[in-house]
Amino acid sequence: MSKPVHVYQVIINAPADIVWNAIVDGDVTVQYFFGTRIDSSWEPGAAVTYAYPDGTKASEGEVLSIDPGKRLEMTFLPLWDPELTAEGAAREVWTVEDAGGATKLTVETFDIAEGGKIHTEFAGGHVYILSNLKTLLETGSSLQMTSPDGT
Image (cartoon, rainbow, N blue to C red; front, side, top):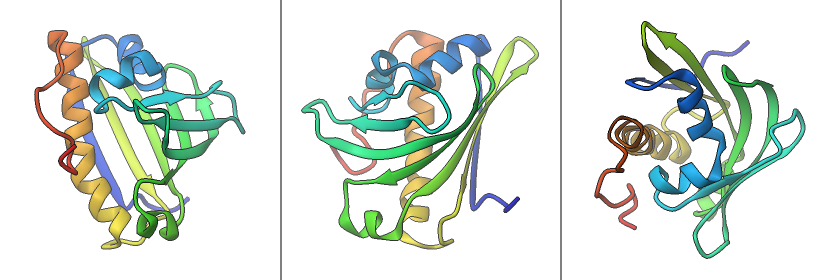
């Protein structure tokens, strides 16, 4: 198995099942992913889409493997910028682990060129999205800020 190009980890003061639900439930993603809703049936081979509030697709992908509540491996093709789309899909692995009463969330990104545009955007963007997720689950409110691209 290849090594991840980017790894982001965060400890969230919430139970693992709540963190997992926040990753896979579109009603929750809109609260921390800057209005973006995720949708999938969460079965291997199923489509995964992230859509903006107006319904246009932000990204698309496929569930590669899933261990509900613990691990999700999927592809992620960004559609918001033609240069990113041209680089192809990244592979992401989301892992949820008990951390002594809190939850450790790890997001690993594979199959992208180190230093490429996707790498740069994901490395800079994950911190905003996952910090917003952490804040939402710990306080009940998301951060009052714009997305990394200023929207």
